[in-house]
Length: 162
Image 1 (cartoon, rainbow, N blue to C red):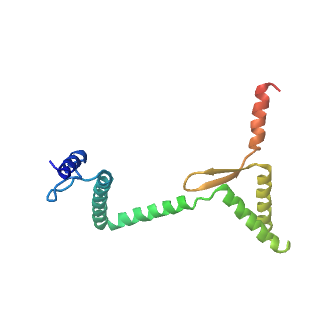
Image 2 (image 1 turned 120 degrees about the horizontal axis):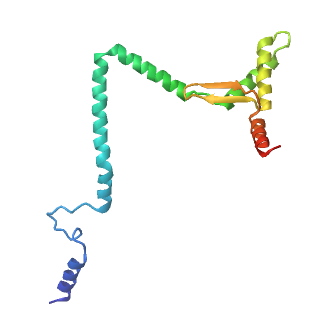
Image 3 (image 1 turned 180 degrees about the horizontal axis):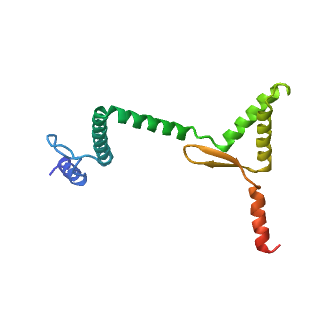
């Protein structure tokens, strides 16, 4: 047996079968291709399911257009409220902006009620008595009766016995 035949026989036995497949036969998919198919197939199936859901929802909306328009407008309004829900910092910034706008006016022209309101809010903020509560769709800013830090201090002071 010649050296060439020995080398070719060793080459065929040492290589994996997928690399030595005959030209007419289909090679089994590689590891990367199998992983991609494993990830791709569930996504395609889920996409088809969601497409069917959207088509069915569209058909139901065509049957009852008034009800669906009420639901869509309600969903849109709730989404808008949730997305634009202000925080306490936003409230403080707006109050400060309004305070600066009021200061630009003469004291004779200024609205006394709005001036007192802005001063009260700024005073509560300085004292730490301004509180904020978010209810996902809207926020409430209110004045606490006492400073939260003092309340914590008084609880600690009383429990330790003075």
